[in-house]
Every structure is written in structure tokens, then in C-alpha cells.
Image (cartoon, rainbow, N blue to C red; front, side, top):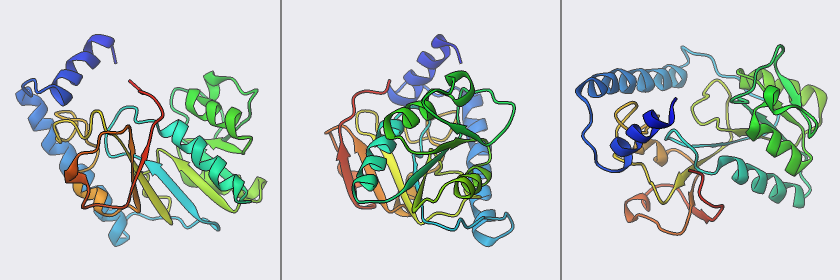
Length: 226
């Protein structure tokens, strides 16, 4: 996406600019598809996979940066301090790989791993596997390493991987924008999805009261991601 295109979307999503009519039509399609996909996983028509250790999901219901990578690094450190052996799986956005899943170590090229996964590997000294299929990445991780817990980075909508804990991140500066679905707004899933997670973590200090009825809140300050 070009810088100009992103600026245009930001004005629509976060600054009250009018939503183009064709965006509204596409939004209806996306909303139906998103809801149907989750429902198919819930009723078992799409298969989910259970991993032989607890899985913690860190993700968000909007597109764009909300500080997931530094939050994952922080969470890994917290678990390591309590004696847990932690592994991480990630999509590896921006990386191009011949084979997946790929083990990411501090010496791995970001061209293969993507920037975020490499940062996690460098700052945590924990095994990180990247791949489009998070289930295969998690299975490979457990095959190669003895882990007590796996963290799935940006995995909230990856329902094929069963989870034990879900943490949804929100940038308090931007919130949920105009609360419309893609492409009319920044939402991947509706605000009601926050009722189903185990914790909502806010990046920043300003909280909007209409989020208080959802999961327990955690406030963290990791700098602006935009």
C-alpha cells in the first residue's frame, strides 16, 4: 500500500472523513465473511488443532500496528522470569521463505523472517518459528524444543490453532477508529469480540470508558507504532 493510500484510509478510519459508497458495499461482504468464518470454526465445520501445551494468543481486532511485537517480547520475559520455557510462532509478515515453518535466530535475515519475528528472536533468546500455517509452526516448535507455553503473535483471527488464553491489544490513541469493518474502517472483527478474550491490553494511558465492560484491562506504554 502506498503512503498516499494509507493517508487516505487514516482520514476515513480515524479522522471522520466520509466513507466512499463502494467501501460500504465491500464492508458488508467482509463483515459477513468474517462472522461466517468464525462460526464455522465454532461449530466444527472448519477444523481446529489442539497443541500439547498451553497457547497464548496475542492479537488485535483492527489492522495496523498496536505494539504487538514489544508486548510479546515483554510477555516472554515475564514468563521466563517465572521459569517457563517459552516458544513463539508468528506469520512472519514481510518475509519471503522457500520452506516453512522457518526457525528464526538472531542471525536470520529479516528478508526471510520478517522484521517483527527477528526482533522477538533477538530480544528474547527463545525459539521463534514463522509460517503461514500457525498450527504447523507450533507443531514444529514442540517437536524441536521442549516448551511449557507457546505465544502466537498476531494470531487472534487464526482460529485453526486452539488457544488457552487470548489477549487483545488496542492503541488507546486511536481506539477502534470509526468502528467499521474493512475497508470502510479498521476492524477485522467487531467490538463484541472483546467480550470473548481473557484480557484487553491498552497501549498508552488514555482509556475510553466504553471498553470497561469487557475483559480485564492492562495498560502498557511502549511508544507510538504509527
